[in-house]
Image (cartoon, rainbow, N blue to C red; front, top):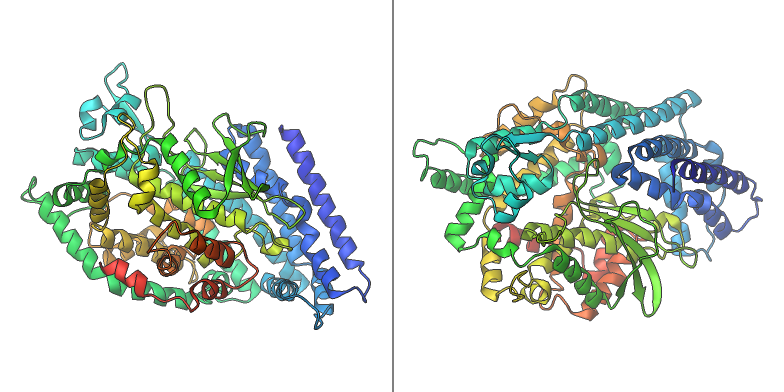
Amino acid sequence: MNHDELAKSLKAALADCRQRVDAFLALPAEAPFEEVVRAFDRIGAPLNGPSGRMGLFVHVHPDGALRAVCEELEQEVSRLGSELALHRGLWQRLKDVEPGPEAQPDEVRLHEHGLRDFQRSGVDRSEAERNRIRALQEELVLIGQEFDRNIVQGGAEFVIADGHAGLEGLPADFLRSHPEREDGSVVLSTDPTDRIPFLCYAKRGDLRRSYYRLSLNRAWPENDEVLAQLLAKRHELARAIGYDNWADYVTEDKMTKSAGEARRFLERVLGLVEARARAEAEELLEHKRRSEPEATSVDDSERMFLVEEIKRLRYGFDSQEARGYFPYARVKAGVLATSARLYGIEFQRREDEPVWHESVECYDIVDDGKTIARFFLDMHPRDDKYKHAAMFHLAEGVQDERLPEAALICNFPEPTDGDPALLLHDQVTTFFHEFGHLLHQLFAGRQRFLHFSGISTEMDFVEVPSQMYEEWAWNEDVLATFAHHHETGEPIPSELVARMRAADEYGKGLHVLRQLVFALLSLSVYDCDPTGLDVGELVRELHAAHSPLEPVEGTNFHAAFGHLNGYSAMYYTYMWSLVIAKDLYSRFEADPMDSATANAYRTEILEPGGSLDANVLVRGFLGRDYGTAAFERWLTS
């Protein structure tokens, strides 16, 4: 689809939505409750599909001109969303209808959520206030686009004048993929495909520190001002709607219910992990002193390298040794085969579906002979593509109306002739994580109502299925089915898996503490009036208060922390969801591939989408409310 066709189809969808608004408002007063809520739900149906592709293409399409068109169209879709959310006629018509005794639970829930969302949008404010709210929302779309764009386009080149000598410690395939230039130098990108192995394995501490500084500054100084605008406008919007701050606004309809509860949760986890993290930091320093006897501290650029060395010495585990068992093609096949066996489904490759890049693959999910969903895999890095890993929804599924569609976007190395693209086990875990999101989105795609389709649960629950699916990447029996050495074909030895699992326990305290600092940062920039706030200084204060590692001076992490836009105040979601995920997995521990447990999990957790509160979903699967015991055992083991 070219620029003009894309724009034409989206504008037609926008016009169709407005016609549906008129039809909804024209429903007679005596129209049945079910008819009213269904018509309300379907107002946005014409955008279901075109809008999803537009949102995806902004981040991944190789044509820069088309990405720019999609950004403009994204703004038009946002304008319609603001218009509908603040439409007093829609609000009043929905208020005017009441559920009768024959109303179905999902109909009642849709009615309640619709009225709640209208209230949270500021629909009851004065006309002047609503106009300001609408203007702020439109400004925030532009600011958010700029913030994200600067991160994607802010990657820099890191030149190592010493060539391969400066890459001592990196595996041979990394050297082959980074040949020396005519002047003898080597160039690295600041993308994750280079960043993770370089910070893990490069022996030259001075190069790691310089690279780390460049990587954390990849969207600075541009995003300093953009972030300030983002915080200011969101605070103004929250105040205009009637909240003290943005964090209070965005957490109100989540599992936490308030920013205060989110902060109390983070502080509880801090209390559990700080002592362990400080003990690990002391061990890193002790290890560093073996080669630098005068060392008095360890900084952030050294963490991954020193943890890797201690794992090698203490547990006899070298992640480079494990890489040989994880060529990309086998990992992909393994994730698909594990998911197919677990849930009794099939994945069928679709060669006939148009894709946006030659490396993208399309698959159908077939269940009991019937196609129930479609997804795309865009798994390898390229210029101007989204730099991390995420699942993007393309179309929400509606029962008997349309298939759900989604795309998995990652940046794993791409196999070439002579290079099987070996993955770190961390990347294998990431693959399972993101596929967990994908299955959640697609299994939840057979709702009666668009509002509840896909991953439409509370946002601080959305990471539960993905974090739980990581457990399969650690299971010896699961790994044995696909982790075969790229040269010998031998399955991964059980003793290597045992060493890998034991080694994974080390550094857990520092990792969790790092995530908590990120979560505190995202909460702290949004639960206050940001006027005069120096986010860089706040990062330094949080680091000084909680991290036992020294910061690398001259870094500006906040400028490239994309979650400050997408998740805003809710980065705590990852840790909150992990607590629940660890408890849910307790039902799988005896046999992760048990089909009866998997079917119950699919039925009770994945398939309902947003049709029930997250607490109700959990209770349906566990037979009780979730607890923290499994998480605390994992954290303190």
